Image 1 (cartoon, rainbow, N blue to C red):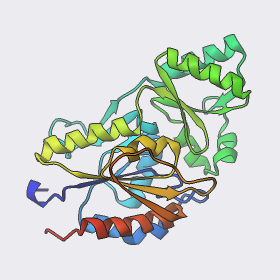
Image 2 (image 1 turned 90 degrees about the vertical axis):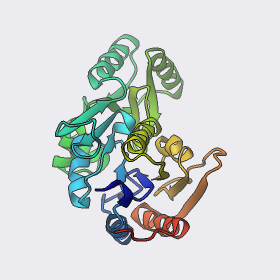
Image 3 (image 1 turned 120 degrees about the horizontal axis):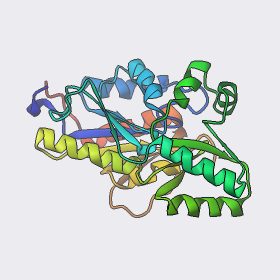
Image 4 (image 1 turned 120 degrees about the vertical axis):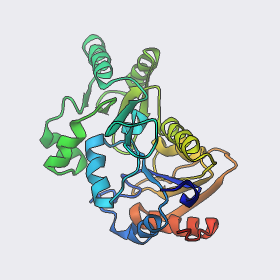
Amino acid sequence: MEKDTVHPYLIFTDLDGTLLDHNNYTFDEALPALDRINQYQIPLILNSSKTQSEINTIRKDLQNTYPFVVENGAAVIIPRGIFTEYTAPVSDVLLGASRTDVLQFIHQLRDQKGYVFKGFADFTLEEIMAETGLSEQQAEQAKERSGSEPIKWQDSGKNLLLFKKLVEQQGLKLLRGGRFLHVMGQTDKAQAMSFLVELYRKQYQHDFTTIALGDSQNDQLMLERVDIAGIIRPAYGEPLQLKQTGNTVLKSTMPGPKGWQEVMTRVFGLIKIQRQF
């Protein structure tokens, strides 16, 4: 793709509860906006708590060939042919701690302190399926992690605060997602997004208007750091609240892909995109 045909926009999106329906993980109701994004060749960058294996399956369904972010920013996955400095068929750029290091530490804490929790490393496939509604294949993909561990906390709130403090003292972090707590290195979706934005700026030698859509607390920093933020109403609970950011904030009235379509329709009205090829 020639530099002068690349639209100066980058779209980052969460998946579960945002582009994907919270219950059945479909995106059919967002197809009109997705088709338009594909037509205009705007990079649509998936930025999710899901694993590389999970997102690869979704990318095939979306016919998406762009870089993507896994496990809440733990790693950035870059296919060949997008940035000149990444020439491997697929480059896995780990931004935080490895999952091996995460598991070693939290299991040590559990043994020493007696904290009660279960992580994906402890769950059987059947338990993951029951907790998430995933199919067996999807549950297998969810267990293939590189830089984070989702846990289900089964202890007191007081012990959770103590656990969080010890995790942070180790140079890790505890992040609340839509269904689980995630233990990972000191990175997040926003840092991974910034990493990719800089790569795009360097590759194409111009600035990009950044757009992001999300519904959960783990999307907050990402949404606060873009030019246009789309807050998708969650399936349950109250909508995410952003701090004062100075950017344009759009809020959906509907959850999941319906809300995604709703916000993207408004985004297209704001940026007034025109076909350039």
